[in-house]
Structures are given as structure tokens and as C-alpha cells.
Image (cartoon, rainbow, N blue to C red; front, side, top):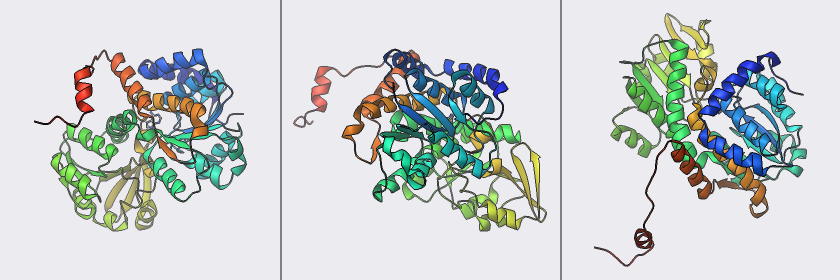
Length: 416
Ligand code: ADE
């Protein structure tokens, strides 16, 4: 039995899911092929993903491919309750997700989703896999493999593999080129700016906008903040990435320097306490602080709470912290701002990420016996297939190597 906010929200959810599907041409093609072939027949899938319109289209595709599917949220604030209602009521997909659930409820939902007895796990951040490996080992017997959606989850999985505790093979969907180059960069870039603007209705142009971290997500965010006319400042701990940011035309500073002059700060590092106690002391009055990394650990909220004399909810998604006369504004309790204060990445990029998820599920079913308990990249043929379908849907034709060029690339003798 599902646990959702209100099953009567299903009609609104259906309209929004259909709207998203219109902009997911790669998934459409995979859906129609898998609906015919049923490559996931007899497979139970437990999916721990952000419950959004795009995720709904992935789960419906998996169901059409023959799988039995359950799902839970991969973040307490990212669930779209109307989508959860649609999945549960109109598709009979067991759904355990309610926006704003507390930590205990969040983990209960993960455990509930496992009752399906999964053969495959589909995770975004590795919480589901961690629960299986830590406290619900009985489910390991039937699990043949899994997939992981995001950078943070892949880092956790690699640590499990390095420590020899990972008990089944997992494909790092995040590492597909057609995932991280687009979803992490253009998806994060657009959705984070969208969420900060929706939450605050503040003008970005002319403001000092600090981006912490210059990975693919940070690059996308810096690019879009720049496009809106902000003075973008990047902070980094990696010298090569810092240099890249500098050569991309951004100011690069230490956190100590940057946070003192920031109007907006957004952390996208995947690490903890990037915005810390000593930083809050030196921030300007009115600074708007947010996080777009997977977990709510990047901002030291406990210390912000302890330092502040007063706390007040100002608008949806904005909490005002007073430190003496100074005000610091925290968005979405420091949780993934783009999924809490907006709707996450647009459908068009999730199209490619979730096409990879669907194709990798089929690949895992076909190939799991050949794989070890390790973390695998997405096979390049699948990555290329996603890119090809996407290009075709955009009406873009590209050239092919001539046989002469192909031979040249495979030879070593010819020089000047
Ligand atoms: N991660 C980021 N954006 C997302 C979306 N729209 N749906 C599911 N997962 C996401």
C-alpha cells in the first residue's frame, strides 16, 4: 500500500506528467521499444528517486517494460505530491513519498519500498543501497544489480567497493556523458537559478553570486548566474578546477574572502560544512544562502541556529536568521534548493539521464552474471545511443567518418 499525501491530487499529477513527457523524446522511443519487447518482465525494481514528473515517466516506462515497480523519495523535500498520487492511483505503482516528511518517515519509506523484494535497485544518492547493506540484508538474496543516478551516490558506492562491502554490481548512470555533461551542467544551471528566483523574487543582475565548487554542477550554475548578469565568484579546493574557473572568466577566491562580499551563496560541492560557523560571522546583512548539493550537509545549519538570536519564516522556502542586527536568509532548510523550491531539472535533460537509467536496467538484467560486486560505467554504446536519439529528435544530422578517416585514426605510421 502506498503512503502519499492525497490520492485526489492524481489528475493534476497526470496533466503535469504528460506535459513533461512531451519533452522527453529519447525516453518516448525507449518506452515504445520496451513496451513491445518487455525486457524487464518478471523483474521487481525498488526506486529511490526524486518523485517528479520526469521520474514518473521513467517509472511508467519501466512498468511498461514488464517490471513491477515501487518507489520512494530520495530527499524529504523533493516530492511532488500530485505526481506521487498519479503514480499510485493511476498506475498502481507502490509509492512512498510525501513532501516535507521528517527523517524518520523518510527512512521508513525507503524500507517500505523494499517490501517489493527488489531484483534491481535504482538509487539517487545511495540511501536505498545503504539501507539494504546496513540493516535490511535479507533483500540481498534476490538483488542482481542496481543503478545510481548522482555524483554523491557514486562516491559512496566507490567507497563501499573499495572497502569490499558492496554486495552487487551497480552501474553509475551519473558517469554517462549524456548524463553528467547535460543534467549536471545545464540542468543544475537552469534549475538552481529558477529555484533561487522563485523563492526570493530578487534581481540577480549586478549582484555578487558565489558558487562553491566548480564540478559539472558548479560550472553550469556559474554559467547561468553569469548569463543573468551576476558578478560570479567561484570557490574551490581543487587547483585545476580553480584554474579552469579563472580561465573561464570568473573571479576565484577563498571562502573567507568570497562570503564577506556575497549577495548570494550557493554550495554545490558534495562535501560538508563548506559554509561554516566562522563564515557566517563575516557575511553581509541580507545574504541569501542555499545548497544544491545532494545532502543538506554543505551548510553548517546547526551552528547558524546556535549563533542566531531569532529565527523566522519569511516566505515559502526562506528562513530568516538574525545574528544581532544582521540577517542571513537560508533557502529550503539547506536542502537541494532546485528540487525543494522549484521542480528540479527540466524534462529535456532528465530525458537523457532517465533514458540511461532504463537502458542500464535492461543491460543489468542481461549481463549481471558477467559482472562483479563493483561500480561500472554506462557502456559507451548505450551512451551513444542516447545521444543519437536526442540529436535525431532535434532534427540534427551529423557526419560519419569516411573509411579513409577511420583507417587514419587506427594507424600510427603516418605523420607530417
Ligand atoms: N534531479 C534533478 N532534477 C530532477 C528531476 N526533475 N527529476 C528527478 N530527479 C532530478
